[in-house]
Length: 383
Image (tube, rainbow, N blue to C red; front, side):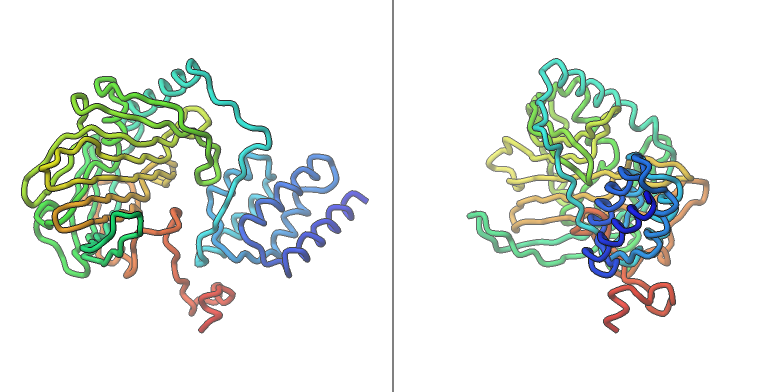
């Protein structure tokens, strides 16, 4: 009787979703609701896995979603079925996942609790580089400019300038950025010789700079939120110019200034409170300096290096207002791998349309429609 109850309920849910074609958000809701029934002995892990085998996703299922469901109690057979769905959905568009905050309003941490949380974040940041292995990865930096725009809040119209593909090496706790392509043309000079708006310090420099005790950053509670489906704490911060190490400048003109800065840091609610997102804005820029606006965003997610998961940058953006208008650099990091002597990234590793994703997860990848396993992908059905 219990098994019939679960089977009937699953069937009703699938019909409501429309012939077993579901979004990732619907899949999450389904698995969580059925998991409750399984805990009540009204079904089994094997039965849920069997039903999941008949599901067809309309969006890409990320491993991080499966990890969260597993942490919530999904059984081994269900996890196996989810991994099969993840493999089948690789060529689909990224999912839009909204994780609601708890029904009960979350209490703002007391000042003592906030201080304790920030101490844990500081400890995490100060030990961050020691936790990282030597690795290499690829950064694709799409540089854009807007020469005409309004200051009245309207969105500027950016046009592409160029796309710089670089090899980033992290060896002995030192970052090294080597451009290898400008568009489709090989680059022979160093990064600064490219001209235009450039950016460095993408791995641990920005965080260490902010949480360095010498910086004496002032942190204030901002709000609770969710980030990539996880409960997250947001702290605002300010750093005075006298304590700042935040540099803005024109690389090709060898002109730079150290300014005050402010922003927000997104901290995972679970200990050890890793930083998941960092927003930074230059403040008190001298009126006669060529750059009058400088803002940056850096986002982190877990990447696999040598079979282990490490929290590393995956998306970034730098926005600057200079004498020639606005410039925006969108950075994307991928192809992380363990550094070994002779490690390299070849031109063959670089996708033709590898650019910063606007979905904050990863760029949609067009499936190979000649591969039989992609015959049901939406992009292939249109052909």
